[in-house]
Image (cartoon, rainbow, N blue to C red; front, side):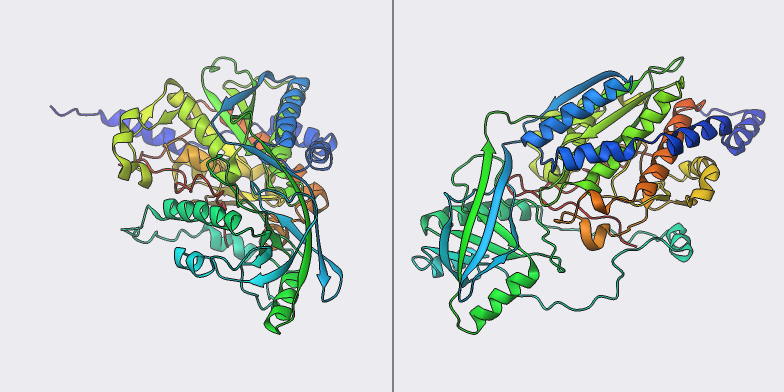
Length: 543
């Protein structure tokens, strides 16, 4: 049976869709005034970085940070401030000390940091350095019985060349114009080996057992950055299952190269190590921080904003991602200070486990919005590919939109629609009052690598902002330079004001935010990482 829609209704629908998106400029003015004059963003940032330090999920610092953010949001007047548990995540880990010195052929300090979830030494240990390749089962068999008491250099040396890329950069007008152009996606690749992460995990377990059995003192790899930066993330095992291996470190490229040259010249090198690390076995769950500004007539619907609270351990997690946390906390502080009465409930979430594969936000989405069915366990191939069908939870229809901040200290220059073309006109209207702050660009491109992907992957409107790179990709991302001093105060203030306005207007819209069609098979937000070896998340979107 066909249904004929009256022409007048079609005409009215067309008129409605072409109406301009309303923007409350009076509220925007108030948001700007509060954000510019009374910002607390840098105070929040200092607490998270200088006071609490790095926040590796499962560590004591992360637990303190979760409790502090909950307490601070409650102190600002947000309601239902609580820690929402998820898990299991696995063991916690922290390191308290690392000292690395060359003792022969000359003495001198070396700059290196341990990989997360690797053990420490039992006090200072000394050993001769040996360069070696250990990347396959055959390498282990070939070197059996030859490595006792050695410190193994596993990487090749790397030639350090001058880069034409500036250390500090912002989007130019031409960059932003180019970003507005939508590249048609290429056809997806087929036949990718879904078992590669499992094979990697199997070999890493075998390597750990081998190194312990061979009485190796430690392994060292070269930092992927130069200029004295040590970029380091995970390398051990969150789950206790067999040996934890030996201490694994990453060394500054310039120091690593020096020792490698000495070895190439057949000069014996001896290093002394003292690494102190701690595993936390008792509690394997983690938690997200959640709080709300209650809505009024549409309080059953939700607008969310969030950022990941966890970090790696080389610096103090300033640009990745205390900056994002400070911005989203400041946005709700502004709205609460103005005593706005949003129609929809505004909910802030600060995620844990992002650096290990968006784990905290994925757990939250599974619990509240959508999850694969239990019977999907019978389809291992679909589970590995992340194409399991979804079971929708009652709150799925209640979420209007989610806004995420996680690309360093840079100011907001615009927003990605994540292929949601219907969002474009809305965002253009919301950005217009901030053109004088440099935020003008709306692109239909998608971006990934952070927590909005977990919402987007199940068909929920979820967005990440276009941010100036500053020195995120060149100096701070997962490095020893990810510290308070690399934060640009004016950028955080600008971003907080824009985010507060976006969240407010999303909460006040007459209609729910437009959604994209669900894909035929709902994809996972990211490839399933090997559970034992912590994966490297994607850095900020490339230009």
